[in-house]
Amino acid sequence: MDRPLLISTIMDFAADYHGEREIVSRTVEGPIHRYTYRDARDRAKKLANALLRLGVREGDRIGTLAWNTCRHFEAYYGISGIGAICHTINPRLFSEQISYIANHAEDSYLFLDLTFVELVEGLADSLSSVKAYVVLTDETHMPDTSLPNAMCYETLVGAESAGYEWPELDEWTASSLCYTSGTTGNPKGVLYTHRSTVLHTMMVCMSDTLGLRSVDVVMPVVPMFHANAWGLVYGAPAAGSKLVLPGRQLDGESVYELMESEKVTFTAGVPTVWLALAQYLRGSKSTLTTLERLVSGGSAMPRALTQEYEEDHNTRVIHAWGMTEMSPIGTTGNFKPGMTELPAEQRYDIQAKQGRGIFGVEMKIVDDDGNELPRDGEAFGDLMVRGGTVCDGYYKGEGGESFIDGWFKTGDVATLDPDGFMQIVDRSKDVIKSGGEWISSIDLENIAVGHPEVVEACVIAVPHPKWDERPLLLIVKAKGSGLDRNAMVEYLSDKVAKWWLPDDVVFVPELPHTATGKLLKSQLREDYRDHALPTIDAAE
Ligand code: AMP
Image 1: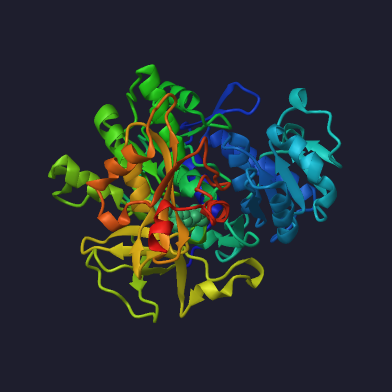
Image 2: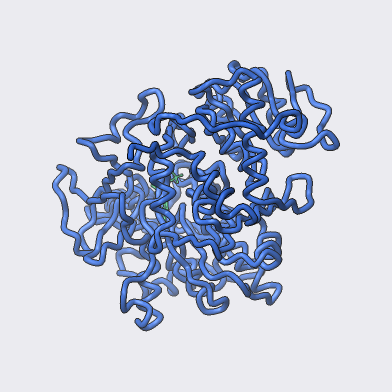
């Protein structure tokens, strides 16, 4: 039958078949809130009625600046349910980028958490398309604000009835919009459709992708403003899983407390969050008693951290890779037959790779002339992807150079092995080109953080008169550590080829990150461009 693939069917499925399953949120106001998928559908329908009353029509963009909570969840479904576009904005961006994005998208309303009222008050004059601001709170917590036409979410929704039939939209109708966190140039918009979202939901629920089940308790630590929380806020209701939304408290202790109290079995987030949690667990001598699977993506998951979760907490670490442009999941690192029985060291080698291609995403690696390279785990080249969940251009036609003959050029350099596992060698602009050969900054970082006194490591290229570029290792060391340059080089020396060893090691109090938690290497390259490598004199 020609039935459209619509996001509203996910909400209906959850409410009809898993109506009593809970959504638990740590609210921005503080207390834990709980209700069911049935309640959430009623509220999303009330919101739909409220939006229509405000004059919102199909195709209109509604911005959100919000954490993972039930109100944001309702906004996802209420907005797309009427055919409007839910435009999630990353609040960690610079304020000029936030205004650029909201203006570029021409958002007509902006939904915001209490946390961001002050931020948006400062920007309101520059937001030319926004007609009114909806603060995601109740009357009791509604702040006294200078925002023009500020409304209280609970008052808005409370006045409506839950009587509403989701319209039967065309499945190609746009549903949501998310801007990429490019480190250079203006952010670019990726527009998703109902069709791409439902396809992605089915793909991520498959057993060897994320394998969500009704018995799972799913906690997306990855924010809903980062590539749709990697599809989990659609996947969990489509599977009937209990959903735990951690709000704004993403420190190790708060994440741990919620995981234990709600008996979370499945979680997903960036390595920085898993690092903070691991530090907390070590310090407090606590263990994860219910967590079965931990998905890590967004940047490379350090091998040592995977080992720690597997050995100390009996938690399976699943490395995942994806991009905003891909809805976002592209690969996940579940084991194939026989791999679980391998010696631990070999298993960790497999888990350090970014994962296997999933059904629905085609991948290939190509050389500079576009010729396909072998899938032998050795050859590396530009990673290209295509599929029904990959965008075919950026919003308003920008950034066309990334789309070549029906493929999307990811900007990542990778290998593909005969088992289908992909490994990122580097972001193409981060790779270090030394004497015509390549050094993977990711590999070096991964090994450096294996040192027990290293908290975070970053490797960048520094210009070199003889070799073009040489690696510089920047390290944030643990409090009280006496680690020095020589000891660090010594530590690396039996783990990498001699010519990969960094020419210098610099200890820094902290490293800069992008709004999605990736190392901001463009800034560091700029800061250290003139760094005097001790090897330069010798070369001259
Ligand atoms: P974003 O669109 O913000 O999710 O960023 C996508 C980019 O993040 C990819 O092109 C990769 O460069 C990087 N990335 C995502 N996942 C991983 C991973 N597991 N390992 C290394 N890099 C990753």
